Amino acid sequence: MLKGVLSDRDAWSAVGRCSIEKAVEIVGTRTALLVMREAYYGTTRFDDFAERVGMTRAATASRLAALVDAGLLEQRDYQEPGQRTRKEYVITESGRDLVPVVWALFQWGGKHSPSPTPLELTHHDCGATVDVEVRCAEGHLVGLDDVELRIARRERPVPSGGSDA
Image 1 (tube, one colour):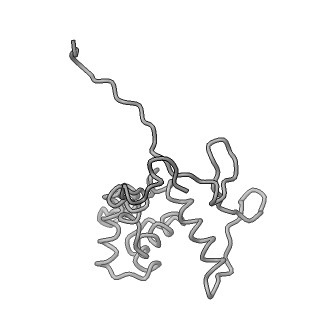
Image 2 (cartoon, rainbow, N blue to C red; image 1 turned 90 degrees about the horizontal axis):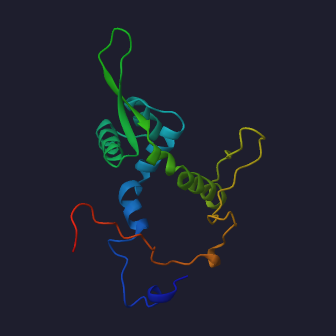
Image 3 (cartoon, one colour; image 1 turned 135 degrees about the horizontal axis):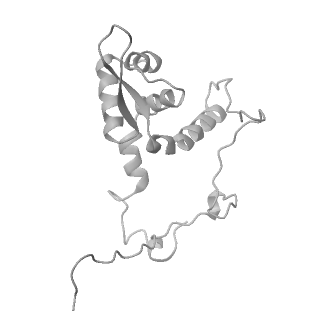
């Protein structure tokens, strides 16, 4: 729901400034999300990503490079005994922050797909199924009709250095 100055949709446009638009530019392809899925599952090696996602070597190289550039994965050197040094791909903090989005897609796909998967997310400690929810900073469960979009209030930075006097 839009409130205040944002409620007049003819007075402003989100094009180029929307967080959803910016996120989709980074992870908005099938292969990007599937590479991230594999990274969450512990895949780190180039050939394993290619095989498990079903991509060509060229597509795998391109997608991994894009996800590294976006800061969702990072490259690290590894070396098998007697082999040359190679790169592995490890999930970053930014990539971990994407996990709830991927889990939500997993949950949605399981519920609404014409051919649902028998897989489910469960809590390791107690075995209960996991549901992705939206909660406010106070911990309240938030429904679709309970969300408002507003302009964030940000502290103005204090100028460093000299005086304005």
